[in-house]
Image (tube, rainbow, N blue to C red; front, side, top):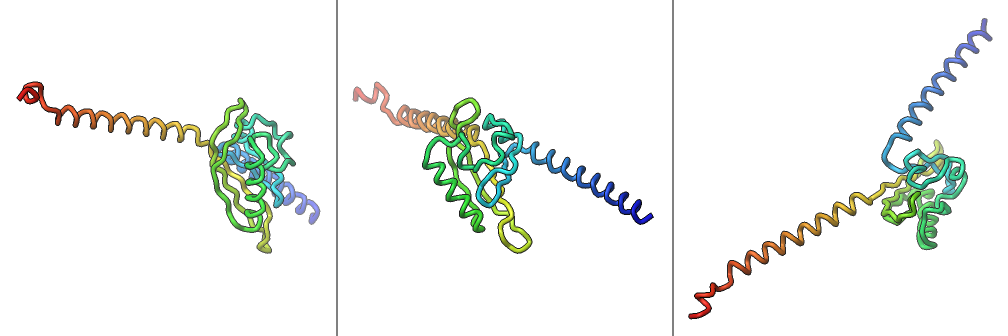
Amino acid sequence: RAAAGLESRVVARTRDLAASETRFRVIFDSTFQLMALLDREGRILELNETALGFLGLTRGAAIGQRIQDLPCWPDATTHEALATAVTAAAAGRSQRGEMAARTWDGRLAPVEVSLRRVADPEGGTAWLVAEGHDLTELKAAEARLREAQKMEALGQLTGCLLYTSPSPRDRQK
């Protein structure tokens, strides 16, 4: 009877863990953010579907690579900045910055990247969470707003000039 009771608890616990994994996977893969779980050295343990789609990578091609070694980073400066950020985040100093990343279709996209430490029970670093947000739409909206503001200012200036210009009759006097 004891063995049957233990087996029943193991089956229930296994079912609960599978349900928990499913909930995690749904949330992780449904977010619009680019997300990765890294080990302390910055090696990718998991990448969400949004990140995989943005980068044009398969999960198998990404798992095990250091985040700074992914083919999306356009230059050595970005590679070095990420390596430094991983070291700082692993030491407990959250990192955040904007950099360019090459997307699956070859365009360079502005991305806000952050790295945060997940502490283990002893206060050390268990993992790092990397997040990215594609800023392409935001940057385009800001550019449209700046252009609209310039046009508005030009219209106001033109209106002021027309209003303050002397009329042809006043110029003859």
